[in-house]
Picture 1 (tube, helix red, strand yellow):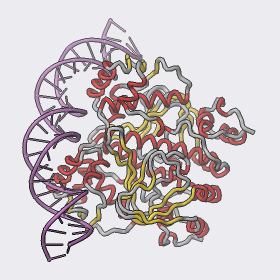
Picture 2 (cartoon, rainbow over the protein chains, first blue to last red; picture 1 turned 135 degrees about the vertical axis):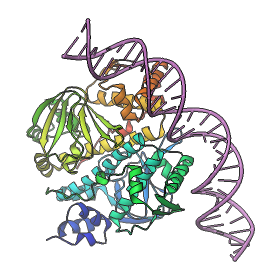
Picture 3 (spheres, protein in one colour; picture 1 turned 90 degrees about the vertical axis):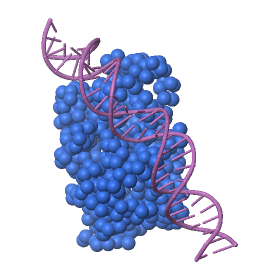
Picture 4 (tube, rainbow over the protein chains, first blue to last red; picture 1 turned 180 degrees about the vertical axis):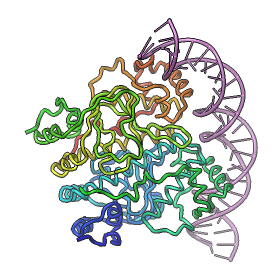
Length: 248
Length: 248
DNA sequence: CGAAATCTTGAGTATAATCAAAAACGGTGG
DNA sequence: CCACCGTTTTTGATTATACTCAAGATTTCG
């Protein structure tokens, strides 16, 4: 009865099956969702704060981030998204978007009508629970970021962010530890950690001096995972990655 | 067919009906949930990070907050909870708690078994959506707090927090604008805004000097709402309070 | 009333922001 | 391939914001 959903071509199927094995029936229901696929260039907004979208998007390929801007022209990045994420799924129940979503590099995005998702949820309560769970993990990551920004100093914040990104990336693509493609600029790293771009640069140099990382342009190498983890006080439990799920 | 759910004695019914009118059937389903009611003293943990609870709690009376502690002994408060909130509903799908929940003052709390909630969600997809939506609003508030802590300075952060708390309180209890009972200490306000308790004190004095607020002990009076709102750059749309909901 | 917690004040220090400019990099078109 | 452009990264110097430590005042509550 259980499908080989983990090896499906559909990144949503792959993602949801990580926390709970999917039946063939459920896998099919997801794969049959109507989806309008688009290629979007780097640095483009997919949706904006204030929008009332009638569809949610799945990040099929590439990296994205959500952010808000303040009246004083500052920007806070709330999350980075990796392939398989559903970055604006909250729009299914919160009809006015309270944040913007933008691409970090060229992305392939699949748009799914809210209506189709509502039908899916009504017919498949276990899938509804899985999707709900995805949004709860997003919230768990927001909580951890609050600790990061509110209670850690610069070097620590950046180390934590790099640990998190690396870990999440490994979860969706069985990455080798060696070299990671960091798809964001230092300025964006600063917007995510609540630091200025100048201070971000200095903090990254401190991590290099410590021998924790090597970072050349977009090529990041974790030289000493334990050191980075300690500096960032990184404890991955909040990502809820390995947990078994109970029946619905 | 529509009940007078808004005036129900059950705070969960009252809360859910704010965003979507409930049928008599749905109202009854919520009111018939098995609920174990307990009185909890001020300053007690209700659940702790690392717990695997088999029930979720409803805050029936009193105020609570969620927090995490860092290895260095600092604490970050992630949210304050008002009567009617479901402060650990995420435990329904995230089985290991990634934050602690504690009372600010003496509280009345109702515990509802996860199993009963799962059955409720399977039988009433519209209620499942409403509960899901509640957790999405929590996440929206986390996002706004990220902006607050990451990109606003101390005085602004505190003003924003006071605006938010006042607004949420008004939504659950049709409060007069005059005097508000602030159930948290300055140290806790600091833990919520990412400031030290000393700096919190100075920031509050600045707000008093500006004539925006009066705060004596636990008695807060908003003297100049517009000024406070501007200092805190407070825009309540992220609370998703007034929005009409579409059919399921 | 007295003890404990909370709030307040002062002084010195640390962390991070801002401003400005130079160096390095990445991509483009000649 | 190379010169050129815009962007990103880096550096230095100055300033602002917030933290820490310490002690005294005030409030709360038993």
